[in-house]
Length: 451
Image (spheres, rainbow, N blue to C red):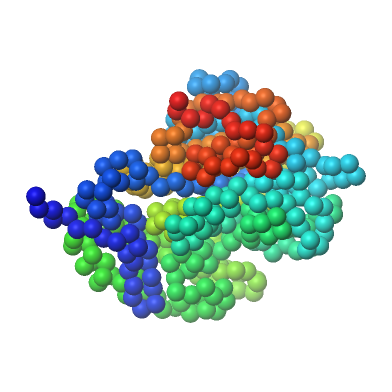
């Protein structure tokens, strides 16, 4: 028997004039008779965490009924196209987020620090921070053995707040939810250009002048590698060629939008000290960051990404949807309906941004399905009622297929004393990183698997 289909090495890249681009996973990268070509073993585990700050309006988040027959609430309605891939999880608590004897405020700082760790952070205004290793970084230690980048930590807010932010707690606890060690918080990157250059560019410079000179070259970084891309495509079959073309188009589109954002920022705010490449509105910024995450997963540059849709205690206004007031201030609504209504609008707005991400994952081929089919995505926050700073009955949704290991379309309600860390243990188990305990965990959650 003669085999004509050629195999391309998994680490094949396109190089040219200082640009190096990783490629998406193509069928041609798997030998014709390899087991991974014929079985579900081709699935690559990936973990995405998308964090929601300042709590939710819980009676507009939590479904009224349990099980498969639940109705989507207003805040979750934008996720309707993905209902069969989502598990709404109620009743989970973060005891570590509560104040200890002698502590008073600081709930936002503790919320950010405990979400993925389950460890009560040390109250300090200095550099002697301490929490716990976060679940995403535990995953990165294992899954990162197979990728160029162990993980990405991203956000839409600049992590430039220093010193004391809330009731004796340093801002470090609110700038990130990711902890590499007990004393090392991982900074969140909010600048799309920096993320793009880290993934695909030839420079890690964050100097705005350097990036501006790059824009003025007025050409795509793909120009210098196009001849090599054309040559490579000649040996691919129809499905690989379509996938490769889609990938190149996505690269061009992301670069075009980053350049446009930089040019607009420079033109509209010439006298303001502002990082280049950050779109003006929340939705534009979030979508661009989500696009970069899809590209990072698609090229297998990393398998773990943590993304904050806002910082705890963050006061971002949303004038584009008619809300000039800051988010955090509105969450202390004192039960005034006009303020509650505005918080609900913000909650829905953020969910719409997240739905964009899910649609991109669903439309991106991966293995025998899509990225959404293979991934586990945790979408939620570490406060429920932002007005009262409650660390119980936290808002969390689990999405994705986990390569057939998750059954969605249900609302699961757990006993009120169930630790949130039990969910984190279960998530780690689903992506092939088993762990016996994390923070204050006391076991894994049931009812998450198909069986």
